[in-house]
Amino acid sequence: MNYCAGKDYEVADVALNAQWKLTAATMRERDKMIDRRYDTQPTHYDALLAAQRAWLTYRDQHCLNEGFAARGGSMAPMLHSGCMARLTKARTAELQALVEEY
Image 1 (cartoon, one colour):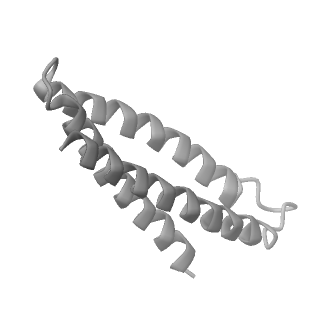
Image 2 (image 1 turned 90 degrees about the vertical axis):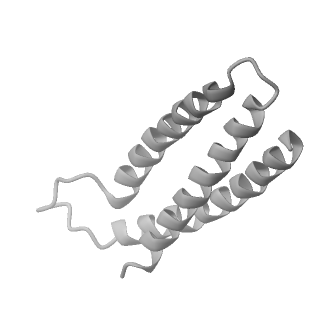
């Protein structure tokens, strides 16, 4: 079960990284339309990157905590990997939605 949960996370992570490339490219394209003479807010890409970094920290710490439900036990890696896969799949959907927004 630990192995399968780990593999599920690996597949989810590959999908996340592929979607990240597409979403980041889309945000960079949107940034080209910003008139920096009047707009001093962060770019689409800069905001995305900051959010992704914060999300990675959140995911890693949250899933570590979920694994603590079986702290020291043989089930802890499965709980951790399952959480990582679940949150990673959800984030991949969020990144995809950003591309489809407009």
